[in-house]
Every structure is written in C-alpha cells, then in structure tokens.
Length: 375
Ligand SMILES: [Ca+2]
Ligand SMILES: [Ca+2]
Image 1 (cartoon, rainbow, N blue to C red):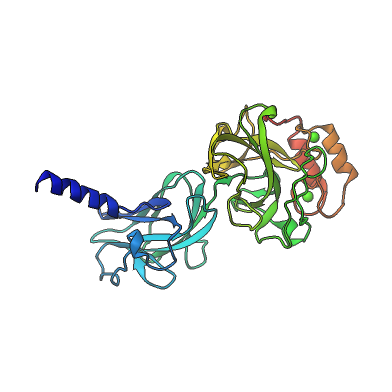
Image 2 (cartoon, protein in one colour; image 1 turned 180 degrees about the horizontal axis):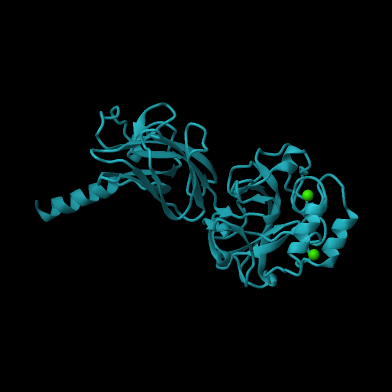
C-alpha cells in the first residue's frame, strides 16, 4: 500500500468512527475465561431499536450451551452488543436495559463489571421480583452472579443526571433514595417557594402540574468564584427521588439560558437543609453543567465536613435549618416546637413527610450547631 492509499484509508476509517454522546462499557465474563464487552449510553440520534449508524446490529439467537454469550435484549425483542438510547451529552433521565448471558464451557459464575462516568449511576436487578439481586452501580465496580442459570437475565436501570445531590431529611439508606411524600400528599406548591426571606429569589419558575417522582423544589446558584459576591445567576428547579436535579419538565437537565460558557461553582439550596457548594468549578456549555455528583464523596462539597454520611458510601445535605440562616440552633428547635402537629408544606417538616412532629425535632437536635460551609 502506498502512502497516499494509507492516508486515505486512515481518513476513511476515522470518518466511520462513531462517537456517541455517552458511551460506557459493561464487561460480562464467566469464571472460565470467556468475556464480552457490551456498550451502552445515549446519543441524540439513538432509538430504542437497532441503530445501525451507531454500530448496533441484530444478533442471531443464543447459541446452544455451553457457549459463552452476553448481550442486550431490546424492548422490541431484538438483541445487540451495543444499546444506545435517545439523549444528548446533557441528557438527564432514566434508561432501562435488559442484559442476558450464559456461561461457556466449564464456567459456573458470571461477573458483570462496570465503569460509569460521574453523574451516572445504575442499579442491577433480577427480572423476577427485583429483590433477589439488587445492586447499586456507580464508578468502577462489579457483581458476580453465582447461579447464572437461574438468573440469566438482569434489568439494568441507568440514571443520567448532570447534577446529583441527596437531602438527609427524606433519604432512606435502605432504598438509596428520597421519599416523595410531599408530592403524593399534594403539598408541593406549583410556584417556586424561594421568593420569601432569606432567599428572596423572585424567579417566575412555576408549573401547572408537578412532574412525577419529585421530592421538592431546590434553588440553584451559580458563582464565578468562591465568594458570595461573585454570584452570576440563580434558578429554581426540582429534585427527583433519585437525587437528580431536573428542570420543570421533570426530566431535562437545568439550563441557565443567559450563562456564558466557562467554569463556575454551583450552590444547592433547600429550604430546610444546609446549602452546599461544589468543591471545584464545573464547566458549563450552553447553560448546562457537565456532570457533577455531590453524593459520592464528602469532598465533592466545599469546606470541612459540609455534608452528612448517609451510609453505603453516600453523602447528603445536612437537615434541620428551618429558617435558612445557615446554622442549626435553638431557634430552629423553637420554630419546630411552635409548628408541632401542623400539616402541609412546612419548613419545620425536616423529614418532608407532610407533618411537623417529634421526628423533625429529633433531626434538628441531632444536627445541632452544624453550619453551612458555603461562604
Ligand atoms: Ca437555622
Ligand atoms: Ca416530618
């Protein structure tokens, strides 16, 4: 091959390389040395079916055992090694995949290994009840299925979120998510609630009906530096039970329309939790943040011990600041006592279950004298 042909063929090869918006590996192996790397993610051009342009291709039926195999089953019952779904690089939402596998010769177990980007988390469950196997996925990790003939398919739920945060007051460590009692009780207002002191945010964010799966309103603040005086803009948004900060439609990532491209700090405020600020700047393009997950480490938030340890390696915003002054103290306990047994959308309802009671006062007491690390 002469050099011109070589350059031409390299050029053509590059032209055919496909670059998905989000492209993640999922390696399925048995304990006899067989392995297959599957790929999943999102792309604006992807569908729930076979997308040939993204390298997806229909697989023939499973080979007879004992032949190793690993694949995704699509909603239309076709199978593929690659399963991309609709969504751009800033997609914020949930996708559900089905994985199927079988061991090769002399294999007895199957190990699923993942390497997920920041802001993307998942859950692996059996397709029978979802309770025999129920594994949280984030970062780099793996899970071994010891009886792969009984559990030869798994459901993989993937949450794409550009900003992720948990609230201590309504978080369940067992469930790995927050309750949505306020939404179910019909207590969450249709207009953003941060118009009052001390937030004094007069944004017009409102909805005619709440999207499903919402914990509460939160208030986002963008700063160009660490100091409060460097505030650029604010916006109210919703927090989903999975910890995703979503726009008013309940599924899109939040877009700050007038924000120039660049690096900014982001502050998350909630009406009865201590606010947190990102410990480093986040790149925003076209008003949308690159993924940033506050829940995975104490040092994702700015300052010394800015969050509370929720267990299982998760961290969340500290609850109990009923008056939003940045410290949990006797005045918060006093307000909570004064509002005892009141129902509705109350800032003294720390647990976000629609009633101010002893459990709320207990949360405030447990966090006494803690204060925000946001300058
Ligand atoms: Ca307070
Ligand atoms: Ca409560």
